[in-house]
Image (cartoon, rainbow, N blue to C red; front, side, top):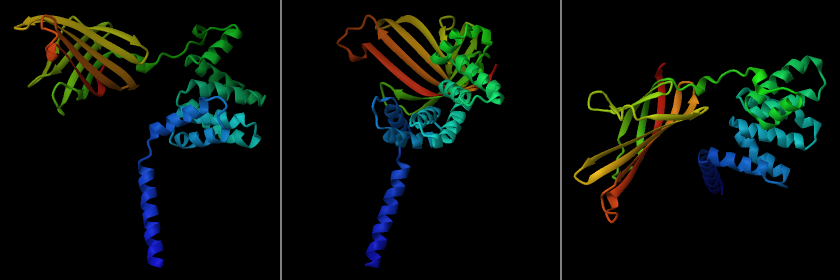
Length: 280
């Protein structure tokens, strides 16, 4: 009997450890956001769904859990909710900063007025709609706040990306490097050659940008024994820190004069990776 009990416990422990290792943080986070935003969701279920992601440090989950706790109306949850909002606001979460400002304002403590004002400014500078509406109601504008410029919105400099193919015409696990040089509106792109980087499509690159995301595009054409070909290159830089960005690369080719019955008339290849800002 003892041997059987030990065996059962061993299986349970191993199964539990395996389950813990296979938890998908992204799936847990999505369960939290769905629970927090679903109308008439049971508050206990929603709180339980957000506990794990909040503990792992996801600002959105920390904010959601804090709001769910405050919505229970229980005074004893206020310290926990406040701590969660502090963590999320410290990471730059504009909604958490606004909610924390409202929470501190309710205390009517004069010593907290400056802190409350700082949080409201951070929230408005973070483009949180309720904060911007409150600012407008008070007769102010975002321009008057003199919000600090985001360092991660300036892509100027030389980026080196290490990419791997995710969609190719033939299986290819080779990692390769790409260099991107940005100087204002001027963009140059280099691919990895045998000895050094080789510039591709000089003078043809255009850049569009919205805050931390930059999209580089180029169109080119030429001819070979199949006739005219047209190719489009797209490079996406998604900033994740001042010195690092996710880089996505897509090349699409259309052999204009080739008959549509041939499957290789058009083809697309895609690569993904990380790029580092190596010099300004």
